Image (cartoon, rainbow, N blue to C red):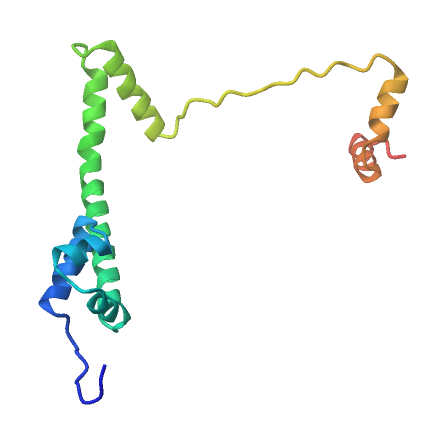
Amino acid sequence: MPAGRPTRTTLTQLQVQAIALMARQGCSASSVQRQLNLSASTWQAWRRGELFVPALNAAKAEYEEEVWSGLRAAAGSAAQTLVDLHADPAEKGSVRMMAANSILDRSGYRAREKMEVAVVQPYQTREELVQALSALPLDLLHAALASRGSAP
């Protein structure tokens, strides 16, 4: 700030409006500048100032906590809705099945992932087996043999 001008210790009403638009409504900086008819130099001065950015970050964090708190508060009734849908014989089978899947997923009983299994053919000859084993590191072979009790 120019010499002789006191440093602000509080946000202006326009800054409070800008913070509300960004933190609570998700408006972009350019959208806020247009809506509040702010010049680029005013916006830059706010961004460089000591009050605006910390206040914006605090407002975003506060709003995010409010949203998560609301979701946590609704979780119980949402879970009960799933249980009710699953248990209602009047519901379509597809609705009951989706409710059951949701209940299982959220309870930790997820569907198993598809697994690819490669079938390994046994070695036809002793030489093939020796060739395959010779490609393995010696310390691995020694450890395998030691675990069987037949160290070299």
